[in-house]
Image (cartoon, rainbow, N blue to C red; front, side):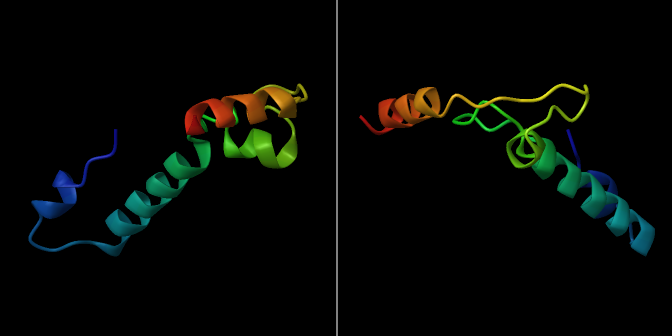
Length: 72
């Protein structure tokens, strides 16, 4: 979990702290598991698992069924 309390409690904020926080926030957003697709953004974009050298295949009919279930 990312915390901003370290930044909030400082009297002066170093630019490197902000850069590090933004880098961590961007990584967290890019690696979050998507609940409808059941995949990370990297898997959805590249069609490959980002940690292992295996293809990631989508079952679009199953994804459509899950989305419809959420709406109903």
